[in-house]
Amino acid sequence: MADEEKLNRERAGTYRTTDSRFTIEQSATGWLLLDSEQTNELGLPLARGPFATLDEARGAIGAARSGPRPISDLGERRAAKQASAKDATARASGGAPERAKGARAGKARKAPPRPTGREMVIRELRTVDGDALRALWRSVGFNSIGDDDRSLARLARRNPGLVLVATEGGRIVGSALGAWDGRRGWIYHVATAESHRRRGVASRLVGQVEAGLSDLGCPKVNVMVRDENEGASEFWAARGYAIGPARQLSRELGWA
Ligand SMILES: CC(C)(COP(=O)(O)OP(=O)(O)OC[C@H]1O[C@@H](n2cnc3c(N)ncnc32)[C@H](O)[C@@H]1OP(=O)(O)O)[C@@H](O)C(=O)NCCC(=O)NCCS
Image 1 (tube, rainbow, N blue to C red):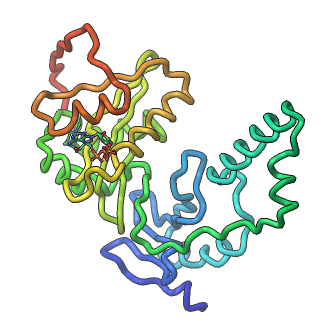
Image 2: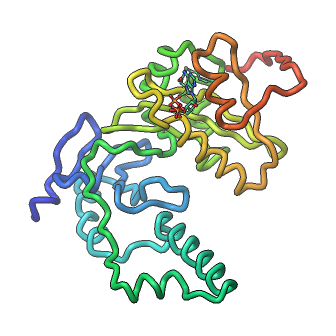
């Protein structure tokens, strides 16, 4: 077995290859192989599996390494989109297309930086995240109906790609729970660990939720902000959110 395919145990149920590219995580449905160099259409690490055993997931690493890059790679699709937009502008103004200019100058494509395993990763909530998330939420004073595992799993199931966490070195450092009710989008429990504030964590999370809502055709997104939430009003104002005319009224229906 190649050295880079050896697995190091990070903690119970989580293993990482020596080169940090692949993480194998145990989930409720089996073992998932997460690839930090390939992303799915939402920009989340591409997941292969679930596999029945850790060995099966390990066995899939070789094929993942040598296989073709998926066409869903978000970075490349964005770059291609930007290049073709520039080409269109250049053509309209009678200039040379950007791609041709780059090719003439003999520009080599820069290799992506080697992952260290400490990069921040935005990914969808998983069933195993509940305890770590509730610890983060307790640290910022969140404690709401809907924070239990069953409710979170239901929220994630109904809102694929919108219920997100930020992790660094496998540790959860941020959250944003997006939801689309068919009329408005909602964002709940936006929180960043105190140690990671003012580094753009919440902005990346919320930006990704907003992009997902927008893709669904959602015309407007709401958040509820408590006055005592530290930095919250400034954060939302910086993202262009404004206080609306309506007051929020609520009633509990007796279901947890
Ligand atoms: C509000 C909160 C989520 C912001 O998280 P964050 O990851 O630090 O936010 P970002 O780094 O993405 O901040 C983006 C911008 O928002 C504004 N901002 C964020 N926190 C701010 C603060 N405490 N004071 C003033 N402006 C702030 C700034 O303009 C910032 O850009 P800058 O750092 O370049 O100046 C975080 O402080 C938090 O978890 N607070 C407690 C929980 C909470 O109140 N959540 C909101 C629920 S509605």
